[in-house]
Length: 120
Image (cartoon, rainbow, N blue to C red; front, side, top):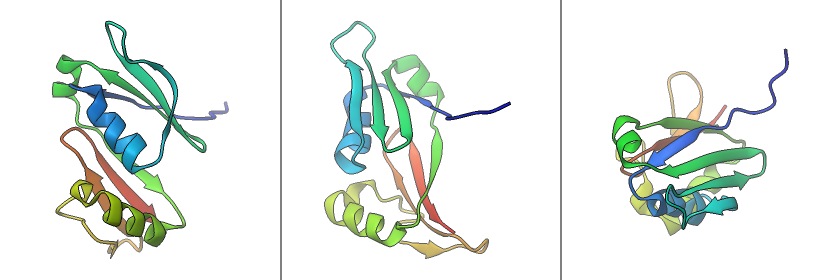
């Protein structure tokens, strides 16, 4: 059995909040969108990563996902994000930190999701 990708669905009360985090801050692009529909959604893409964003108030109130993105450029990513969007830095992991398990990490959050960047 072979799996190619895992693509999460992320729910926001206001989909534009997710677009600000993933597109404006993290550099994803919108590959497909139906933002003007009765049930707004879009597909976000960056290299081999994909995320489906949905505007759905009830599900957004039930789900607060946490994602981990592994990279080999954590210092450059941190420098860019901390300069351009410092408001997203998670207060508990706002700097690149060597963790007890040997990985360097920092984290972002908005009111809906947490994203941990990790480099082994």
